[in-house]
Image (cartoon, rainbow, N blue to C red; front, side):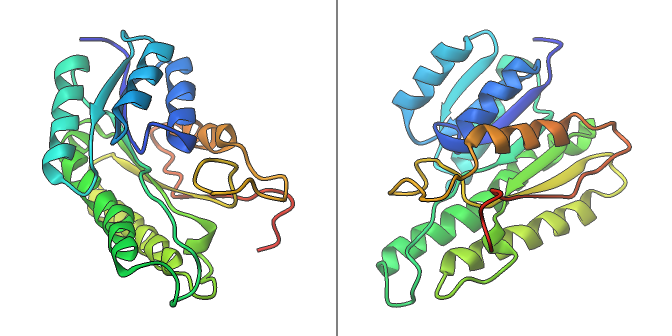
Length: 229
């Protein structure tokens, strides 16, 4: 048990997820780190300190895995006060590109995975007037040519607003984080422009979490200065 609040993060092993974990611990949170890469999670727990970080191997497309992550966080830290549904990945643009299997895994991870995170945390979050954050994208505001990934992020944006409406009256808050290009392992090649750093997005997450209880920041769109779309 601890007086520190606990933030559950999916897709926590790298990129925006791990940057958010570091920022959260520095800001006084405990973190429950959920991802498929056990080695990376264990290394992050070692870095952050086992007193304030917990690793749970989790495939977000499995509701049982997500329930187990919430249960582990509750047993270790006494509850879950916020959740960041961040797990996801992309695909090449073009409806002739990628395999149908890649598409299926992306849709299940980006859309079903986020919905299952919500389902796993909705009761504890409602009970404490907590906070749910979801990783959307600039691509969830503008449909890019041939981008099924855009479609998944449009779905996440709708999901965030649907959840906000459902939680109205509980004191719980919902924030959609919509980054532009971020220099993370999400991209196979380093962006040519000066992209956002993962820390930039993490700071936006922590800013939303730190607002007074009366303030529900529903949407944060954050682009690199050099990005034109």
